[in-house]
Length: 172
Ligand SMILES: [Zn+2]
Image 1 (cartoon, protein in one colour):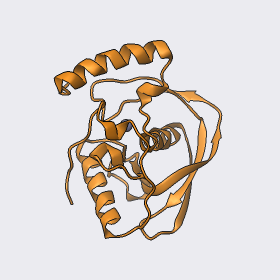
Image 2 (image 1 turned 180 degrees about the horizontal axis):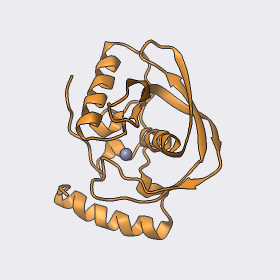
Image 3 (image 1 turned 45 degrees about the horizontal axis):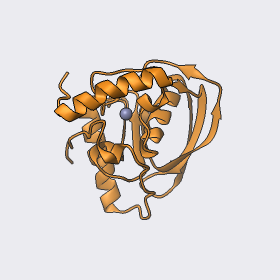
Image 4 (image 1 turned 180 degrees about the vertical axis):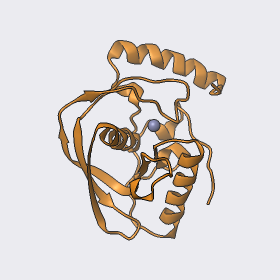
């Protein structure tokens, strides 16, 4: 159990697709535990493995931020089985502290993947849960919310982020 440093915008691991998990073993269980510890400490409602520097397709989501065990979801090798409609709400990201944007997201999604026991899990969601799954699955594809803004807003924010990343200064 460990809180790991959160990788920030500009680090290569956040901007390339992560690899599928081949074997769900004790290392993956430890990874999921570290991701939960790191997400709760932040605090945040979701985290993807590349955000702690591990280029594997693993995500965790907990809209209750640890208040309700029922809401804690983890998925290994998640993929969409359905996307429907559109919504647009403000999103932030633990890897881009101090910034927010409003990317276009599907209104309703269904995702499947494996749990730590290797069983297939299927989740569907709307509103915040749909946005959280999309945001985290984007992470394992190497995409951040910034990449989904309109070209004008994206370029503007990327310029600011490049400056921040160069200075290595992510304190708010
Ligand atoms: Zn994020």
